[in-house]
Amino acid sequence: MDKELVFRQAVPHEAPLIMQIIRQAQARMHAAGSRQWQDGYPAPGHISADIGRGRGYVLCRPDTKECHAIIAYGAVVFDGEPAYEALEGKWLTDGPYVLVHRIAVADGERGKGVAAEFLRHVEEMARERGIGAFRIDTNHDNHPMLRLLERTGFTPCGKVVYRSGERLAFEKEI
Image (tube, rainbow, N blue to C red):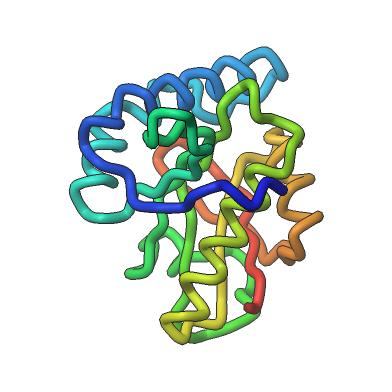
């Protein structure tokens, strides 16, 4: 993975670019037959709320103008997910955890380890805060994400339910 990549909080003016990456991911999921993210979620309001709460993070590639080209986005949450309290299954740990929602990689960056690098940075942030668990969920038919979770050491723990349906839940001790 490129050592030059920068992991940082997103800023409000980046929301339109982040939405382009989200729309690319929605189109890829649709083309692959996945039902995840096909109901208008995530919408611009979700991204703006993430950024406003300090949860929106980007992975960027430096460009020649000292700006950064955003290549991935995700919401990094340290204060829990209510749906995770009703897990159908069993989590590996009982303590505090970090979780990621809405992770997406730009079309031209897929297959280069970008999502794994994003998750690695989240793990590092969690460790710095003394948090030893990383949770995440995805749709049963989101095969690229399922492969990523397997490759990066996540363990299947059960299912969680959102208004949009059931998701497979995973955890990794860090």
